Structures are given as C-alpha cells and as structure tokens.
Image (cartoon, rainbow over all chains, first blue to last red; front, side, top):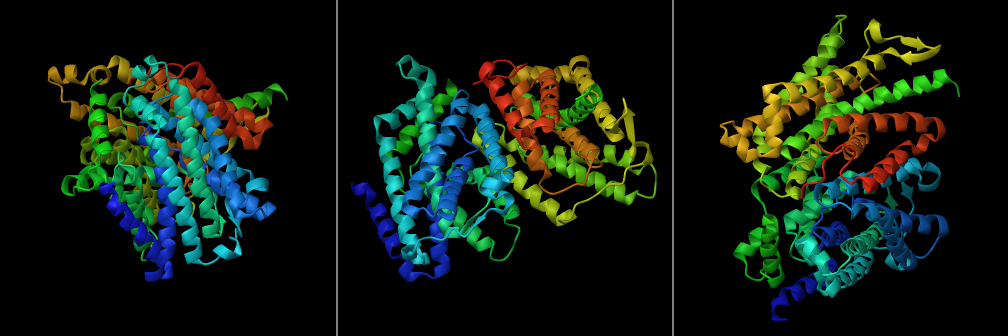
Length: 321
Length: 294
C-alpha cells in the first residue's frame, strides 16, 4: 500500500481544489474529470482488451442524450438519469458490439468508427426526437448542484466511484481474462473461454462508463449537441490514452489533465483549437512514443507499477507471434 | 414506378458509386500496399475540391477553365501526397496501429482548419461549362449530364488502375511489395520510394475525385466527414486492398443509397450500414478480400 501514497495526495489536492482556485479552473477540473472517466472507459477496450475503438464517442453521446432528454422532456431527477444513461449506452453497445467483436485490429477500429458515425447521423437527422443539429438546451441541474463547486464535488464523487469500480473490474478474474485475450486470443480460446462473449461484455461495460461520463456532461454544460458523438470526439480518448500511456490504469487521466488544460489555455486566445491540437498530436506521435507516462516511467520511480512492466513485456511478446 | 424512373435512379446511383470509388480506391490502395489506414483521405479529397475551385476561379474567363482545373488539382494533391509521405508517414511505418491512426487523425484536424483559414467558411460554387450544364434525357426523364462525366471518370480510373497494377512493371513491383517487403527490397528495389509513389498516387486519385465532385454542387466545409464513412463502408464491403472489391462495393453502396432515397429518405445511410454489417457477418474480410492479416 505504501506505493500509493501519491494517490492520497492527489485525492486531498482534488478535495481542496475548489477552495483555492477561481471558478474558471473549477469548470476546467469538472471537464478533466468527465473526459478522464471517458478516457479510462475507452482504455478498458484499448489497454485491457487490446482493440482500438475509434467510435467510443457514440456511447458518450448516447449517455449525454439519455440524461439530457430525460431531464428536459420528462423532468426525471438527475440521480435517476445517470443509471439510465449507462443502460442506454450499454444497450447501444450490445447491438454494435455484437458485430464489432467479430473483428480485430484495424477492422475493429473501422467498424467501431462506422457505427459511431451511424449513431451521429441518427441523432443528427432524427430532428423530431433529438432536436437534430440544434442540440438540446436547458438541461438544468437540480438546485443543490447549481454552482460550479457543488457540481464539481458531485462529479468528483461519481467519477471516483466509477474509477474504483473499473479498477476492481481490471483486477478481477474477468480483468485478467481480458488481458489474456489481449495477449493471445487463440490460447485463451483453447482454455475454453468464449472470447467473443467476454469481449462483448467488456465492450458493453466500457460503453456504460462512457455513457455515465456523457450523462455528467449535459447538466454541466446546460446543453448538448450531436457533435458529442462525432468522430472528432472519438479521437480525444485515443489521444489522451496514448499521451498518458495505455498500460497504467490512471494513464488516461493524466492524458485528460494535459489535454483539457491545453484546451482551456489555447482556446483563450485562438479559435483554431483543432489546428493546434492536430499539430500537437502529430508532434507527440512522431517524437514521444509511449506518451508522458512512458517518459515519466524512465525518470520517476513511483510510476513504475508492477502491472505496467508485465504488460509492457507481454505486449512485446505479442508482436512476435 | 416505371422503367424510366428506375433507370434514372440507377444512373444516379452509379454516378454516386463512381464518386465513392474514386475516394475508396485511393484509400484501399494505400492501405493494401503500405498497411496504413489514411483517416485523412477524405480531407485531402476536400482539399482537391477547393484546389479545383481556385484554379477555376483564376481561369474563369476561359471556357475550358474547369476541364483544366480538374487535372491540375489532382496533380497538386499528388505533390502534397509526396511531401506528406516523406515528412510524416514514412516515420510511422514501424509504429503501432493507434499511433498511425492518430497521426492521420491529427492531419484531419490540421487540414480542416487550414481549409478554413485559406478559403474561409462560405460555400464555393463552380459554374459549369455549357457542355455539362444542361440535363440530358433518358426515356423522357431528365438526368444531369455532368453525372455522365463522373461515371466516365470513375470507369477510366478503374480501368487505368487495373492496367497499372496488372500490366506495367511498376504495378508488378507494387503488388509484389504487398506480399513481401523484404523480398522486393532484396531485389534492389527501394521500398520507401515505392511507398512514396503509392501514397502520391492515392492522393492523386483523391484530388481527382475532389475536383470532379467540386462542380456537382457547392463546396462546403465538413463535406468530407459525410463521405469518408461511406468510403470506409465501401472498402469494408469490398475487402481491403482489392480493386475489384472496391469497385463492386462502391456500386453497391451507390445503388443502395439511390434506391432507398425513393422509399425512406432519412434512412439511406442507415441502410448502407445494415448492408455493411450483414456482409461483415457473412464474410468478415469483405466480398473480394482475402482472410484478414493478424
């Protein structure tokens, strides 16, 4: 347990954060938490299952729309909307995932991307139901969560609970089955494990957490738009995970901190945020393979957790098969 | 519903399919040979359309302006492709899939904003030359004569690519490089130069496709996003790296779109996805592809 003292520090830091910084940075922190949850859920598929999903935003968007529409059209209280978001995203992932888990590698990436865009077009074109490209306005959080600080604590509790849940999943026999599938699907199949079924379950669970992240977004922004489902949004967790390092559990969160801070900073003085982040992505890919955690791992001892090392070796071995 | 309407829908589906073929064939060629999925392919396609507009704008006093702009735009894209391959793509050959995809994803974002900065956000419109400005009539149904030109270009590129890959020495080298990079380079053929050539050729076709698309309607930002996913569907249906598969896949997607628009206009895209998913279940590697590489 001694290794995790820095987690305690981060926790304390996160709790006192709204007391020491201004409202703008509290907003940024909420965004970091939401996008971080989104990225960690993406990493359940990428880091632990070894498949690259380029359509993960679909479930984020479905979650956001589920909460948004329930709140605006049916006035359902927020605590009930969030589980509904998870269920909606899960059902969606069950249907799409059924096809996606039949493929691997680049084919998996393309099919998830295609289904993601399908979801986007459905939301975009179904004007009478979703509001189309007008989006959905007036998603007002309940009174006790109205201020930025209150919403921050609310998000913080839910995100931490979700992270702990995902952490337990990754440490459970199920999580190790996913690692086995990632490292060698054929051998796992020989052990009598139904690989497709396990992949589908993992896909659905990951999508449910993405849906939860999406559900948290609506009341925070007071509005949502179909762009949430878009392809551009799907690239965000990929980038966060690559920059933060996919093999550490908290890697995507680090990516989220970097990405969101950059966005808050850059959008302050230019509207050409895609251009800037595009250049940064290209730069990172060319010159920083392994991401920030990869760099930090070489320098700082505390990030060198056991799981990361084992995973790294196994993934190298996988290449040679 | 009579025969003339069916024929008109068939032709419009064919022209749509040929447009998709022009985009998807470059995508499939680059993936088949270099094993790199170019997410930004449709962004280059859009750049091709804007280039065509600019060339046409400079030459709009001449009647032949549009006919010259189309090949010029395609050649410009080939030059851009050559540059991008040498500067960026070459460095990620040996990287993992997510990094390769992220690189081209980064390109989408950069190109999207560069287009905005260069050409602004207003839609651009090219006035067609008189030859293709008026509709032609088949069985009394009007049909846009420009679409005949699109279909012709599609078929020409299909035959040209087939001829290049099957009949020429360079085509043989390219096909050999698909099977074994090592063997080809052991024969003294520089693989990086082959790859640069293939990437430039892929973007040449993308630029041609964009330029041919430009006079169809107005050129708008974000047009690429709608088309790229359909192009992916085409290559998934046809099988990656298969020219014939891409051709058949394009026609399937184009025709499905054209006919479903008669019955269920909002669902045309959804139907394309259903067809794609169905084909994937029956043949996960596509209609004409070979079972997938690991």
